[in-house]
Length: 224
Image 1 (spheres, helix red, strand yellow):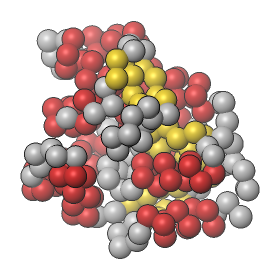
Image 2 (cartoon, rainbow, N blue to C red; image 1 turned 90 degrees about the vertical axis):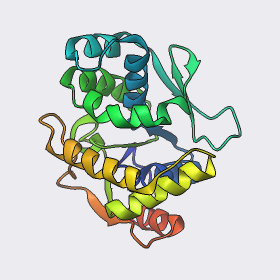
Image 3 (tube, helix red, strand yellow; image 1 turned 90 degrees about the horizontal axis):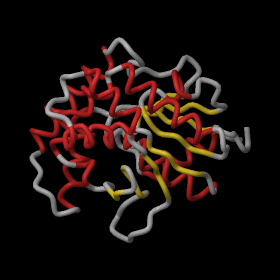
Image 4 (tube, helix red, strand yellow; image 1 turned 30 degrees about the vertical axis):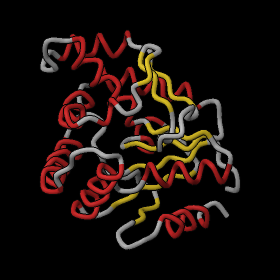
Protein backbone atom coordinates (compact mmCIF):
# COMPACT_ATOMS: atom_id res chain seq x y z
CA UNK A 1 0.00 0.00 0.00
CA UNK A 2 2.82 2.38 -0.85
CA UNK A 3 0.68 4.83 -2.84
CA UNK A 4 -2.99 4.51 -1.89
CA UNK A 5 -5.31 6.47 -4.16
CA UNK A 6 -7.29 7.75 -1.20
CA UNK A 7 -6.33 8.05 2.48
CA UNK A 8 -9.34 8.56 4.75
CA UNK A 9 -8.75 10.16 8.14
CA UNK A 10 -11.76 10.44 10.44
CA UNK A 11 -12.26 11.52 14.04
CA UNK A 12 -13.95 14.08 16.31
CA UNK A 13 -13.15 17.79 16.33
CA UNK A 14 -9.55 18.67 17.30
CA UNK A 15 -8.48 15.02 17.44
CA UNK A 16 -5.60 16.02 15.19
CA UNK A 17 -6.93 14.70 11.90
CA UNK A 18 -6.68 17.99 10.01
CA UNK A 19 -3.13 18.75 11.17
CA UNK A 20 -1.94 15.23 10.40
CA UNK A 21 -3.70 15.11 7.03
CA UNK A 22 -2.15 18.42 6.00
CA UNK A 23 1.37 17.38 7.01
CA UNK A 24 1.02 14.00 5.31
CA UNK A 25 -0.28 15.65 2.15
CA UNK A 26 2.75 17.93 2.00
CA UNK A 27 5.22 15.10 2.60
CA UNK A 28 3.56 12.72 0.13
CA UNK A 29 2.52 15.35 -2.44
CA UNK A 30 -1.17 14.54 -2.06
CA UNK A 31 -4.16 16.87 -2.20
CA UNK A 32 -5.48 17.65 1.29
CA UNK A 33 -9.24 18.01 1.71
CA UNK A 34 -10.79 18.73 5.10
CA UNK A 35 -14.43 17.83 4.43
CA UNK A 36 -15.59 19.52 7.62
CA UNK A 37 -15.01 22.94 6.08
CA UNK A 38 -17.65 22.18 3.46
CA UNK A 39 -20.30 21.75 6.17
CA UNK A 40 -19.04 24.87 7.88
CA UNK A 41 -19.37 26.78 4.61
CA UNK A 42 -22.97 25.62 4.21
CA UNK A 43 -23.65 26.62 7.82
CA UNK A 44 -22.17 30.07 7.22
CA UNK A 45 -24.28 30.47 4.08
CA UNK A 46 -27.38 29.49 6.05
CA UNK A 47 -26.63 31.94 8.84
CA UNK A 48 -26.15 34.71 6.30
CA UNK A 49 -29.01 33.95 3.92
CA UNK A 50 -31.76 32.12 5.82
CA UNK A 51 -34.00 33.36 8.63
CA UNK A 52 -33.45 30.11 10.55
CA UNK A 53 -31.43 26.90 10.32
CA UNK A 54 -34.35 24.93 11.75
CA UNK A 55 -36.01 24.83 8.32
CA UNK A 56 -34.37 21.64 7.06
CA UNK A 57 -35.86 21.86 3.58
CA UNK A 58 -34.52 25.38 3.06
CA UNK A 59 -31.05 24.45 4.36
CA UNK A 60 -30.88 21.40 2.10
CA UNK A 61 -31.98 23.44 -0.89
CA UNK A 62 -29.28 26.00 -0.12
CA UNK A 63 -26.63 23.28 0.20
CA UNK A 64 -27.52 22.05 -3.29
CA UNK A 65 -27.21 25.55 -4.74
CA UNK A 66 -24.00 26.92 -3.21
CA UNK A 67 -20.65 26.49 -4.91
CA UNK A 68 -17.98 25.41 -2.43
CA UNK A 69 -14.39 25.05 -3.54
CA UNK A 70 -11.24 24.18 -1.60
CA UNK A 71 -7.88 25.17 -3.04
CA UNK A 72 -4.24 25.41 -2.09
CA UNK A 73 -3.62 28.38 0.29
CA UNK A 74 -3.02 31.72 -1.36
CA UNK A 75 -2.30 33.73 1.82
CA UNK A 76 0.42 33.26 4.43
CA UNK A 77 -1.83 33.75 7.47
CA UNK A 78 -1.75 30.30 9.00
CA UNK A 79 -4.44 28.81 6.80
CA UNK A 80 -4.11 25.26 5.48
CA UNK A 81 -6.22 25.91 2.37
CA UNK A 82 -8.54 28.46 0.81
CA UNK A 83 -12.26 27.91 1.30
CA UNK A 84 -14.41 29.67 -1.27
CA UNK A 85 -18.17 30.08 -0.92
CA UNK A 86 -19.66 31.19 -4.23
CA UNK A 87 -16.27 32.69 -5.05
CA UNK A 88 -15.82 34.51 -1.71
CA UNK A 89 -12.91 33.65 0.58
CA UNK A 90 -14.51 32.44 3.84
CA UNK A 91 -11.53 30.50 5.18
CA UNK A 92 -11.59 32.19 8.59
CA UNK A 93 -15.26 33.20 8.64
CA UNK A 94 -16.28 29.54 8.89
CA UNK A 95 -14.30 29.23 12.14
CA UNK A 96 -16.50 31.69 14.02
CA UNK A 97 -18.18 30.70 17.28
CA UNK A 98 -21.59 31.08 15.64
CA UNK A 99 -20.73 28.60 12.91
CA UNK A 100 -19.21 26.24 15.51
CA UNK A 101 -22.46 26.32 17.47
CA UNK A 102 -24.63 25.39 14.49
CA UNK A 103 -22.53 23.17 12.21
CA UNK A 104 -23.59 19.90 13.87
CA UNK A 105 -27.25 20.74 13.30
CA UNK A 106 -26.67 21.51 9.63
CA UNK A 107 -24.41 18.52 9.02
CA UNK A 108 -27.02 16.19 10.54
CA UNK A 109 -29.50 16.95 7.75
CA UNK A 110 -29.46 13.98 5.31
CA UNK A 111 -29.93 16.21 2.27
CA UNK A 112 -26.97 18.38 3.22
CA UNK A 113 -24.76 15.34 3.69
CA UNK A 114 -25.84 13.99 0.30
CA UNK A 115 -24.97 17.27 -1.39
CA UNK A 116 -21.57 17.50 0.26
CA UNK A 117 -20.77 13.82 -0.25
CA UNK A 118 -21.28 14.20 -3.99
CA UNK A 119 -18.75 17.04 -4.09
CA UNK A 120 -16.27 15.13 -1.92
CA UNK A 121 -16.46 12.06 -4.15
CA UNK A 122 -15.92 14.18 -7.23
CA UNK A 123 -12.71 15.59 -5.78
CA UNK A 124 -11.55 12.25 -4.39
CA UNK A 125 -11.83 10.49 -7.73
CA UNK A 126 -8.98 12.62 -9.01
CA UNK A 127 -6.71 10.42 -6.92
CA UNK A 128 -3.79 11.01 -4.57
CA UNK A 129 -6.00 12.70 -2.00
CA UNK A 130 -6.01 12.70 1.78
CA UNK A 131 -9.52 13.36 2.98
CA UNK A 132 -10.24 14.27 6.59
CA UNK A 133 -13.70 14.28 8.12
CA UNK A 134 -16.14 12.28 10.21
CA UNK A 135 -17.56 9.75 7.76
CA UNK A 136 -14.96 9.40 5.01
CA UNK A 137 -14.10 5.77 5.69
CA UNK A 138 -17.69 4.75 6.38
CA UNK A 139 -19.75 6.74 3.86
CA UNK A 140 -17.85 8.97 1.44
CA UNK A 141 -15.09 6.55 0.45
CA UNK A 142 -15.61 3.14 2.07
CA UNK A 143 -13.35 1.81 -0.70
CA UNK A 144 -10.38 3.91 0.50
CA UNK A 145 -7.26 1.75 0.70
CA UNK A 146 -6.07 3.27 3.97
CA UNK A 147 -8.46 4.38 6.73
CA UNK A 148 -7.40 6.09 9.95
CA UNK A 149 -9.63 7.00 12.89
CA UNK A 150 -8.06 9.44 15.34
CA UNK A 151 -9.22 9.89 18.91
CA UNK A 152 -8.25 12.12 21.86
CA UNK A 153 -9.88 13.07 25.15
CA UNK A 154 -12.36 15.99 25.10
CA UNK A 155 -10.08 17.88 27.51
CA UNK A 156 -7.07 17.56 25.24
CA UNK A 157 -9.06 18.52 22.17
CA UNK A 158 -10.53 21.57 23.90
CA UNK A 159 -7.04 22.62 25.01
CA UNK A 160 -5.77 22.39 21.43
CA UNK A 161 -8.64 24.47 20.05
CA UNK A 162 -8.25 27.03 22.87
CA UNK A 163 -4.53 27.47 22.09
CA UNK A 164 -5.26 27.69 18.36
CA UNK A 165 -7.79 30.47 18.95
CA UNK A 166 -5.41 32.43 21.19
CA UNK A 167 -2.63 32.18 18.63
CA UNK A 168 -4.95 33.70 16.04
CA UNK A 169 -5.82 36.54 18.41
CA UNK A 170 -9.39 35.36 18.96
CA UNK A 171 -11.34 35.50 22.22
CA UNK A 172 -11.41 32.02 23.70
CA UNK A 173 -12.88 30.35 26.76
CA UNK A 174 -11.58 26.85 27.49
CA UNK A 175 -14.66 25.70 29.43
CA UNK A 176 -16.99 26.99 26.73
CA UNK A 177 -15.01 25.11 24.08
CA UNK A 178 -14.95 21.93 26.18
CA UNK A 179 -18.70 21.98 26.74
CA UNK A 180 -19.34 22.65 23.04
CA UNK A 181 -17.11 19.74 22.05
CA UNK A 182 -18.79 17.31 24.43
CA UNK A 183 -22.17 18.38 23.06
CA UNK A 184 -20.99 18.05 19.48
CA UNK A 185 -19.53 14.60 20.13
CA UNK A 186 -22.92 13.51 21.43
CA UNK A 187 -24.75 14.89 18.40
CA UNK A 188 -22.25 13.52 15.87
CA UNK A 189 -22.07 10.03 17.36
CA UNK A 190 -25.83 9.55 17.78
CA UNK A 191 -27.23 11.12 14.61
CA UNK A 192 -29.27 8.82 12.39
CA UNK A 193 -27.31 9.58 9.22
CA UNK A 194 -23.56 8.90 8.99
CA UNK A 195 -22.83 8.84 12.74
CA UNK A 196 -19.27 9.43 13.90
CA UNK A 197 -17.71 5.98 14.20
CA UNK A 198 -14.64 4.17 12.88
CA UNK A 199 -14.92 1.91 9.84
CA UNK A 200 -14.49 -1.76 10.62
CA UNK A 201 -11.14 -1.83 8.83
CA UNK A 202 -9.88 1.53 10.16
CA UNK A 203 -6.66 1.85 12.15
CA UNK A 204 -7.43 3.67 15.42
CA UNK A 205 -4.76 6.09 16.67
CA UNK A 206 -5.05 7.80 20.07
CA UNK A 207 -3.25 11.14 19.70
CA UNK A 208 -3.21 12.04 23.42
CA UNK A 209 0.41 12.62 24.42
CA UNK A 210 1.75 12.18 20.90
CA UNK A 211 3.53 14.83 18.87
CA UNK A 212 2.45 15.63 15.31
CA UNK A 213 5.55 13.94 13.93
CA UNK A 214 4.92 10.79 15.98
CA UNK A 215 1.38 10.47 14.63
CA UNK A 216 2.55 11.12 11.06
CA UNK A 217 5.15 8.38 11.38
CA UNK A 218 2.53 5.96 12.66
CA UNK A 219 0.35 6.61 9.64
CA UNK A 220 3.28 6.31 7.24
CA UNK A 221 4.25 2.99 8.82
CA UNK A 222 0.84 1.65 7.75
CA UNK A 223 1.68 2.45 4.12
CA UNK A 224 4.73 0.19 3.99
